[in-house]
Length: 291
Image (tube, rainbow, N blue to C red; front, side, top):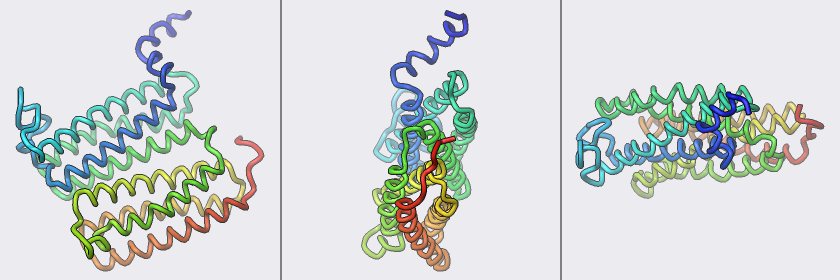
């Protein structure tokens, strides 16, 4: 056994040998998604300024490390899960760089996520100490970018096991959840009930699912099919989904009638593209190899 193999084994290999790098990256993606949703919950419940606006401390227990009430608990638990997400991101990046046979693109993506993580931590602190809409926006979109980086990395790691069926499934999932994205927005739900914290969490959960669906459909579709028309259509789903998410968030923040109409029109167009994409997948020629 070589010296390099011996020295690296205690650090990385026991975990990787038990679960495998594909499962490590998938777990990291799940924790990142959970952190985002908990952050939405903290904002929606007005808990971002709980913990007496302390950071990283809270407002109870030894050294003020624990929450004193329910609003503080939301903020504290968000930070607690975010800490584990940070460890998972760093661990995934180290594993991707040090382990053999890891795609360089995967390593680049997770390292980029690791670089963004301390920036996200600083932005999280600023949401507590300043709580301006600009900082909240940067905090949200940085989190989404980290989620996208790890989603793309996860698809790359698992791509050999993903088939044309997964493209159809991803497009179908997108077509199913997109109406919920609209229905849970203040434009629709506001006429029925309040845009409550639970509604906000549900809509942002749909947002992450929609993002993941278009990424899977686009990446796997480009790998599995030869049709330029189909791959172009799949790429359009990603662009439209990002626009829907952006406009949907602006609709929540500004209540601008023009943006509201553009949001609804873009969502309708994306739904049509999903349906057309599902039909195209059924008839598109498959690639003879993955090369």
